[in-house]
Amino acid sequence: MQEVHMGKTWLLIGSILGFLSVAGGAFGAHALKARVPAEMMEVFTTGTRYLMLHAVALLAVGLLADRAGGTSLSVAGWTFTVGTLIFSGSLWLLAGTGTRWLGAITPIGGLILLAGWAALALAVAKAG
Image 1 (cartoon, rainbow, N blue to C red):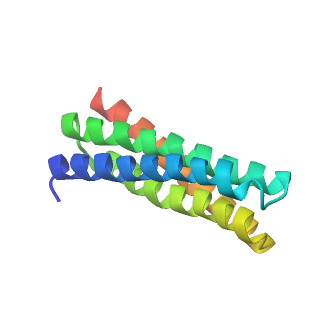
Image 2: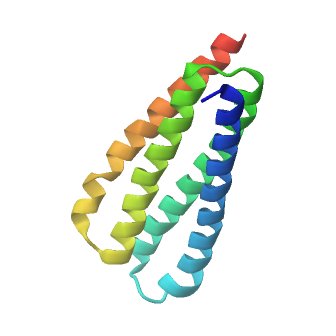
């Protein structure tokens, strides 16, 4: 894929994740809050917060891809996408189901997100 198209891809994915974050936050505040313990509500909220933060990060990757391009930005985009799905997804599922082993998956998503931030830093450094 050409980098210009990847910029659009990251903007689209970031927009979708932002939408899901707002929808999830509303669901948590209005439907889930009455059904789960406060501890699990906090877990759900953490997943929602990281979802929004990385939606915005993907928007930044999309805007940078139109200016600079490069492999590091693609790595950042993919790792933010996959890491967010694993990190936030596992926390949402943990909060909704109470299935404790899902908490063991969350750090994998966190490590992938860290790789995304490192790739973004490398991309910015290369762009000069």
